[in-house]
Image 1 (cartoon, helix red, strand yellow):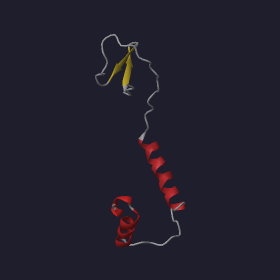
Image 2 (cartoon, helix red, strand yellow; image 1 turned 30 degrees about the vertical axis):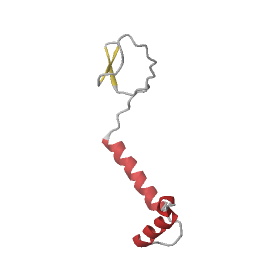
Image 3 (cartoon, helix red, strand yellow; image 1 turned 90 degrees about the horizontal axis):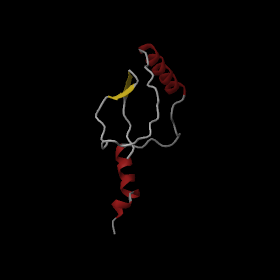
Image 4 (cartoon, one colour; image 1 turned 135 degrees about the vertical axis):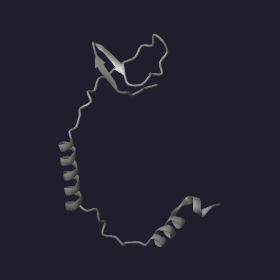
Length: 85
């Protein structure tokens, strides 16, 4: 069973942040992926870019705008569960 967990490398040893569910003497394969800290300014810049994409690339299928009731009716008609035997 594969597990993914965070650990800190200290004094030549990986120290998991949480207990592992492994039997004693279990052999494991380890892949190392450094966790990169993101600064507040980097996070703000990323959100700004996402908001620009939302403004410049709206999602519009050009189709009819259905009301909630129409959507509910359509779901009843198209759903195999609603059709019954």
